[in-house]
Length: 168
Image 1 (cartoon, helix red, strand yellow):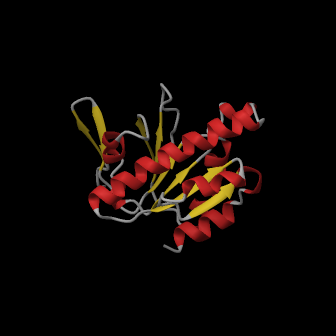
Image 2: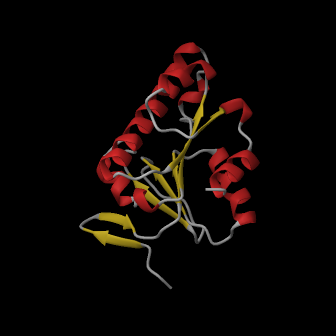
Image 3: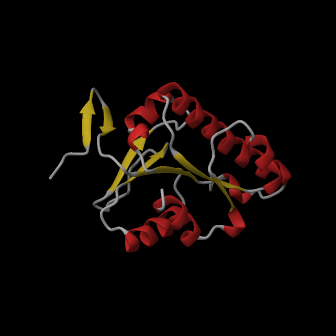
């Protein structure tokens, strides 16, 4: 078996290829993983999150603790070799669904997408990015950011995500 996580200092680096990077972790993440595995049970998932503990136990599910806007964290996730990235809206702030809450949630998604765009341009590579957003009006703010597909939180459909991601 090929080793996919290598320790460098106290950090773990993912060394696999054609994996899907999930930024953020919520119930939709779990459902999406189950659905994708129905189509391709060999694909790896790498979760980037800042949760203190990794409670993930699935064989093809890897975890990197860190800030998804940090270039070093994205490097640990082997971003250039990924099949794609899915940015999930922050579940902790979804409790507040008023306009201020959606602004904060989509603002965080925009910041993460900006970091992904920066790394893609720096490495002269292209990665398929799907972003979950709360408010459709915020899509215009992503004008110069490389996001291939936007999915509204209330309209998230795992089959749509799977088709757009696996067709790459």
